[in-house]
Length: 238
Image (cartoon, rainbow, N blue to C red; front, side, top):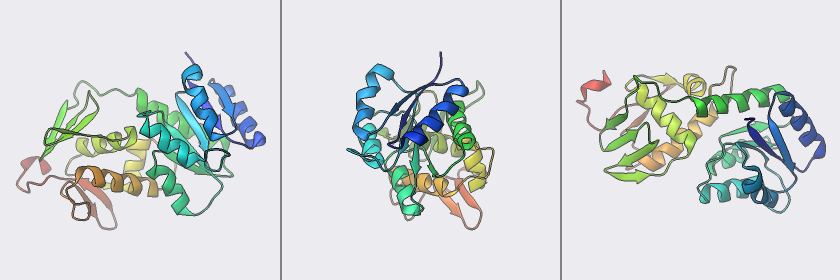
């Protein structure tokens, strides 16, 4: 079955351009022009991914993201914005978007990012993958895609879980932002590494006792990040 993509943009020229290229790539596409219409399309269309403009009538992209995540709808979202201010881009990520692109953009790059998201979703854990990663007070359950701290569930977005799982699989190793961008977002081009920093910040807020003095996700200055554990004597960090 074709993957379904919902385009949400009030500029017909942009919607038509995206729609043409996505249909050419084999996707089933629907277009709406305001934020409220997204929720009218969820049940009848059941999109596998949403391309969502930031500036929309009735409900803007941030409000749409926030409401979808509030409803525990984990559909992947790529935010489009004509605004250059990084705070606007980060706001989208803060409210549940998986990625963002700044207008004007190449339709081919958008297609690459959509394909990257679908590859990540469809990649199932290999038979050699650890089923449960126990690190200090935290347990990461691979097959269930769940995280627990002292037995209590921690609610993560799909992308936050994928980032944490990738760090678990490379536990104790220093990973650059570009390595994380490639490994988690599957980008085969030079992407904006601020995406990584935003998601790391969100993860720390959810799994650390104090995000300012993290026990798990450590920053390696001028390099990137590594996942350790509260117990410095843990031999698995070697």
